Amino acid sequence: MNFAGMIKTSMVDYPKKVATTLFSCGCNFNCSYCHNQDLIEYSSEKCIVSEEEVFEHLDKRKKIIDAVVISGGEPLIWNKDLGEFLKKLRHRYNDSFLIKLDTNGSFPERLEEIIDYLDFVAVDFKSLDYSEFSNVKTDKIKESIDILEKNRLDYEVRITMYPDYVKEVDFESISEELMGVKKIVVQQYRRMDIKMIEPYSDLVLEKFTTIFSKRGIKVELR
Image (cartoon, rainbow, N blue to C red; front, side, top):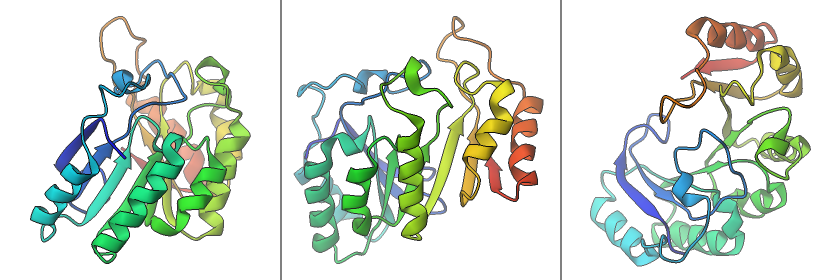
């Protein structure tokens, strides 16, 4: 499996761990606020980091790196190749690295196929209505979350507060949809240019987190 990029040392992509982060090519979503827009449309010219380059880096830094994070794009587009890569990663290093997957949650069946290779999963919950940026139904994302809960895997559900997708009028309904979730991470959306819509104020973000807290859901504002 080839990757579009690699951050050799990251302090923010795996909670409380030093990680190497890999970015897969291609995505089945087209979110307006995406900071990896160049990865949405796949082309072989973008996939320039080989498995061999990844393993060479990990061989040299295995005493420093705690975890490997697979992000994107959407990694589960490459379910067969991804599964083979994770298998190699586990066997080559005798499970010495923690493995985290960042996913949009739209492929629950594929997630279940590789679940045994994973230690941590971050799933994005983007909206009550996915039709603006994909052909996926919200039920698919809930299926992915259910799989993580069933397997008792360490996970978090991330919500990026893009006002067009996460509408203030929907806050209560979103919290109802996510009842029973282990942990919610509410994160501010960042504008790439001044033409993009204004982000929510900190007060609105705090209002949203309070709704989850009142339902007994662990929530972090990030």
